[in-house]
Length: 414
Image 1 (cartoon, rainbow, N blue to C red):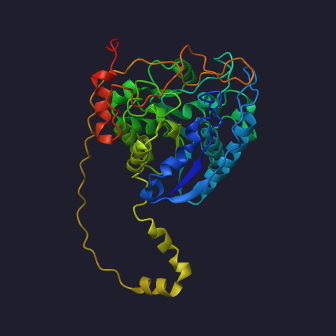
Image 2 (image 1 turned 90 degrees about the vertical axis):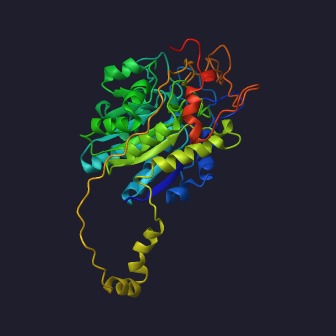
Image 3 (image 1 turned 90 degrees about the horizontal axis):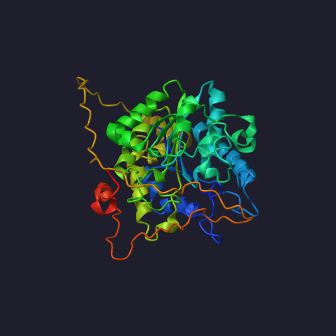
């Protein structure tokens, strides 16, 4: 069993600012999850933090390419080095983002690893959005967190899509996308590229555990794969604390099953969690939900006895004691006939119809120099507990109820 190593990647360089005088709060996500005891609960090693460059869009304007591109490229190289070092130690990296642009760093690490082992490395992309905007399908680009899947598959400007001359980090046929919405703007582009997808309605119809197994089967020709999780894959009824909440998402129990099914194999090389924004989580309830889901979802790889790692090194530290223990005869154990265990049934998820979407994720800044105003008629507000309304449930036991609550549905749902 590999030990988990938790590495913070608190970069917000790939997002536009929520207002003209603020910066994206997802840089605070690693700290919020650590505050929930995540490392101890996973039995993980603390692998530290890769500190990003300062967030400063300056005078960026449309036509300048991806904002913060030099900083993202430099950060990606450093992050790739740290991820590679964890894997080299035989550990399982869990990267706490940060925004989705951190996948450039993990993608670079996977490309290097693929070259080293002489095989291809795949990507399971669990996200509420395709993040597939690029110069070939959009008038201009700007926010790397809305373009990250395009960049890691070799589309876009070379300073991000071909760091160190490596391009692409993942081949189209080695990418599986889970959790996008049926109405995703770039779904047809993904299909044309040969990137396989399982949107939420299909994921729910087939079941989360079976969808994880399906994703693994798509990557059977790869030497291994990386898992990217953007928590906006969750429905905003249960996870509104993201930069771009998108109706029609999954529930926490489904994400837990997806994670467990994806990591329960030596071919899974690591996981990253992105886009959670503690600024929209004043009481820490959503951080608690994410931490609970990670602990449960990573159980197949988590180390239940972290102290054993210290004991395995005792042969060097205390050779006499270790030798004495090794000399003690082990008790004989009579062999028992193998009994084939029956597979546990997958928890049932009550079907429901998604709510109506709103276009928000990856919206590009306005064309005014230095301005990052959203190009929508009304500002997007995150009122977690609106007046005269029942507070949104936070705990796992009520997640599915929140998705099927009549008050959450619209008249246009069918």
